[in-house]
Length: 210
Image (cartoon, rainbow, N blue to C red; front, top):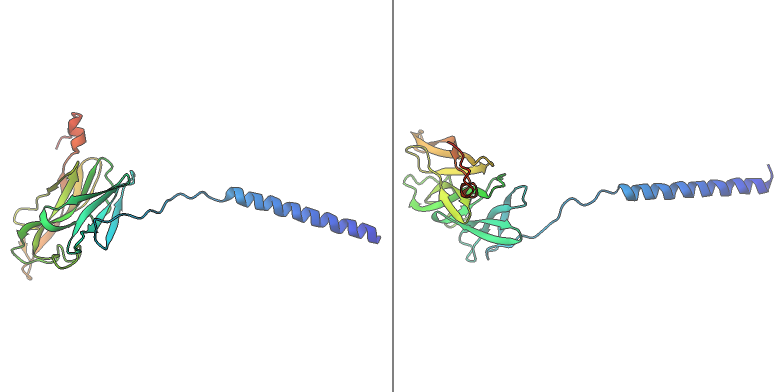
């Protein structure tokens, strides 16, 4: 083979390799997946810390935010770019601590009431709120809907309860105390389910049977 032919083969090989490389690069560029998420900062109610613990299919984020004095936290809803304080059941603290999947306007969680806990049980709030007012009050599960928070009852004889989730059938689940005392003098807990229904559906005349 002459030198001229060898040079021609080498040039042809280089051109083929370059073409394959360009085609591969174009394929990889086309196959690059699109970004499927967006990161946003959530405003607070004026305190130094807040947290989003729940998000539903409508991108409603719920959780808690500390108030400006950093002495208590309130259940908070971030919705459509706005920040909403859900309030409490009369006590200093409330929070949404579990993922609520409801997409019809219901938020559930836990809130302190203004009533002192007669047994001094700290289990129901010490882990969910920060000091100094994280213990000493009765806690109830709550349902928030259309600007109103209402407490959920416990089993007969119990003081404290906790709501953890709600579905689009208006069923709320969680746990609550009953009147049984264990050897440590604390009341027993049982899982529970409360039945409710959305006010929006009531307005439309669609009431779910119990």
